[in-house]
Length: 196
Image (cartoon, rainbow, N blue to C red; front, side, top):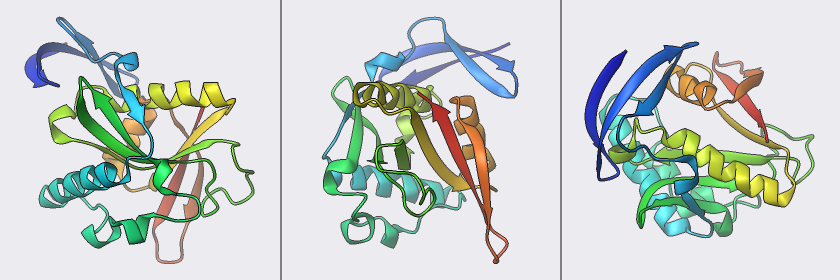
């Protein structure tokens, strides 16, 4: 077991890591972000886009293949399925920790599914100071609570199949790959699903 100390969300944590089934589980010796401590807030388009731009800029600088900056604008992101009210931020202790788009239909990757068959997460971004704190699981738990309130039975998302780090994060958060779309250019998209 590894142990390290870090500052996460303004709290010094001593975290123990245990490898289980390919995932690193975190166990805080002091304090850990709990799944119910994240509040997700809809209709925060400007804040959400700012976080997406911030995280994408960092990721490009670190050598990751992410969305180009010109894709992360209101004109590019808002659509019939992603209206301003579908842009969410995650709050922890009055600080914005993440952003994402939460749609109730996805005609691009799930064209045969009716509206409200699932919640579809797009452009999920966690601010760097909150990375490696189990934030994805906390965000998914908050989305799961919202789905339960609405009677929605699935949470779905997609990412490039070759995005190994992201794939590991999603699998460790409880998603399963349910389909792979192969394109003529050699790229593939993985479609993920989690039952609520």
